[in-house]
Image (cartoon, rainbow, N blue to C red):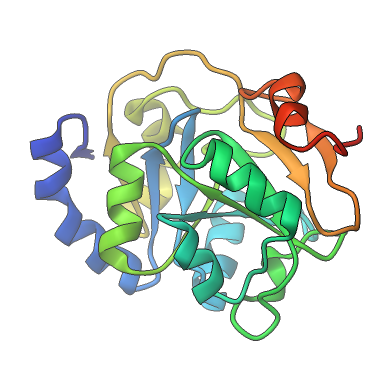
Length: 215
């Protein structure tokens, strides 16, 4: 495990993390909600991450960015509602499912509604990784399917011991994360934005920005 709690530890860890990701390895890292598993958005890296987690086919991953300009750079399109929500709540625990990315992102990231879930993370460590890497990383909860997410680095290491031993998974230890709600998810692929999951951001706060929100 790599210490990843303080600004100094994060800064010291970044070169090894970026090198590992560039080699299509996976990382377990803290976010503003839970520990996540991630990789670059390269198709091979995402396939490896899917196999590592044992993720069911057809269930996509979230994409983490470090700025709204990165959304456009990877070919994703924010609708008018998406633009307003992003301006109000990013960086933070708001996930937007948006259209685009057909030529720049692998189809395994695309959900059944045809969009790709994206969030500008507010976690300083995760945001730093994405910024230095210069491209997004994927995110999914650090657990096996139908099991509770890990709450600290040692828990992740225990769940994925074989992958850690093989060197395919790098665990970033940030201590035990405080219990928190998951990100709020809004589908912005249609003509009207739709609330998919209410989480850390209440629907009342969302409707104050986009009154047309349904669900």
